[in-house]
Image: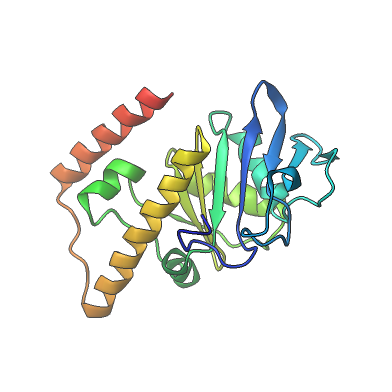
Length: 202
């Protein structure tokens, strides 16, 4: 995530459910730059309480958001939250990211919506994110960044990378004119492929 330019310093965070331990999640620590972070600094916390278990570092400030998403979306096993520049630009504008490229509808299943604003570190941020996600793997967080969810970390990261690339193309197109939407037939075909891929991963 850091090497792909999706975060700077220690911004953003990553978590996953602990295998065979449904009541635990592993999450990146707060305020530790990614190029300095080691595996021993990853925090294991209780999903219900958020209490850290045998950790020397405090968990990410966004732990409440992660806990809410896991609690309300049982099929999600990994979360990547970034402050990538172009996705964050759209979040500040409260502008959704529509599927203006064929591969976008296949990756995302539809428009990436902007969640209602909630202050960082709050459970409300998680509830708003869940509503904006719907059945899609990504959402923009108003004036904040984005959140991507999947059944594993590598897929969640790839979604974040694909979203930032799509957001960059979309923002660049907006600087020249108004992007032309895909035809309805393409949206329907792409949605079918999205659902097939999602069923294969489940």
